[in-house]
Image 1: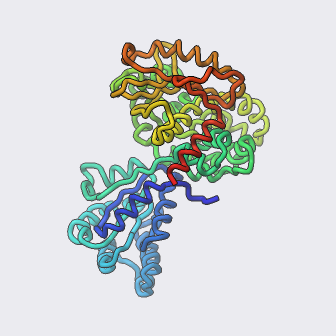
Image 2 (image 1 turned 135 degrees about the vertical axis):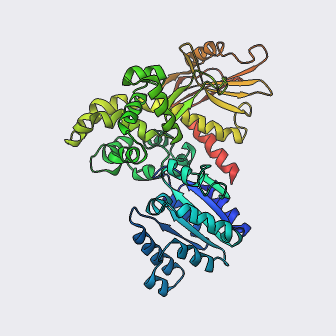
Image 3 (image 1 turned 30 degrees about the vertical axis):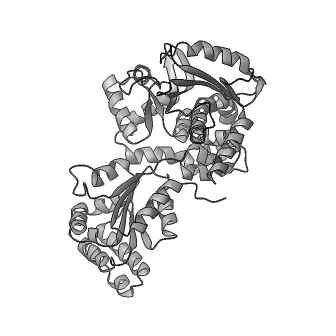
Length: 468
């Protein structure tokens, strides 16, 4: 299997910009392990250019490495021998090679700025003065989202307004992992644990079951995933202990501000402040009922990355025990008994992602314009899809269980749907029940859709065939 999964849209955008022939200044950023370097390398495999990886070292060492890399790429032994004396000489050298179309990608750009804080100003001067009128295709890449935004896009930055485009590289969607694994049950279990970060997915062994992968790839103290969540957080965050407390609370099921405050002992103002930072870093997201406006006060907070959620649920509380080699005990006593419930709370998001794909191919009762969850006064519906102009609404319940009594779930869903306030007198209602398998199915009709894993996979395959 290929180690490069999807990124079709991002690659197409880069290739389209390359073919234009115009100078480009692209900011590429996203969390560590999300696949930025792999995306650039894939792009460069069919386009002329070089990716240079910056390191946390002194300016002189950075310039020496840069000269070695450029000298090899441009076949310039003189540069390799003599090197660059400063950043001015780097940009002058690029100008001398910018008549041709060439991609220059600076990977981990914030490390270069840390070595020389004047670099953004120097780059601004050369870009404004000459580079923007050449054939150079410049990519500045970095893993610290906050640093990349402040260096390249903040109003006070010298580089503000210079970029011609930006790509915030997001984790892979569930459907892309399903493309990779081609097994729906395995994809659900793997995605619930490893999420959409390519490096995390690629660390898993698809030939082994999920429990084997958890024991070997996540819970063993010598595996890179055992420490990676902590490493990412400590590299991004100041005062990580407060963030750890909030993330741990979220992983235990405390999704409201008040519950987080009670659980952590932190004040509301502190929790709000740290949640805001976690949202900016795309580690946490705020969800509101799909029928509410964005200003709704009913917002709930969730960990965005499934591996982070799994880590704070099953690894962080027991790290000392795991470090003493007690993986088997924790697997039997904690992970296996709770695993189905853990997967179940992520399953609805995966079904929602499948519905987004089905919606593009008109595989549902109507083409929706909004999709999300709904809750009110203790009642919840996993998925609600809306079409405002035609006042159509679809209610869906998702059960990560076998032998589900679909008739009972359908009756309960109809009862809860009556409490959803949205064009109640004029709307046309549709219902859907999703489960691993059913013991009883509701009678088939135009208003009720019943889908097990086989049905979901058939629709997925049909959509993918339509795209070919």
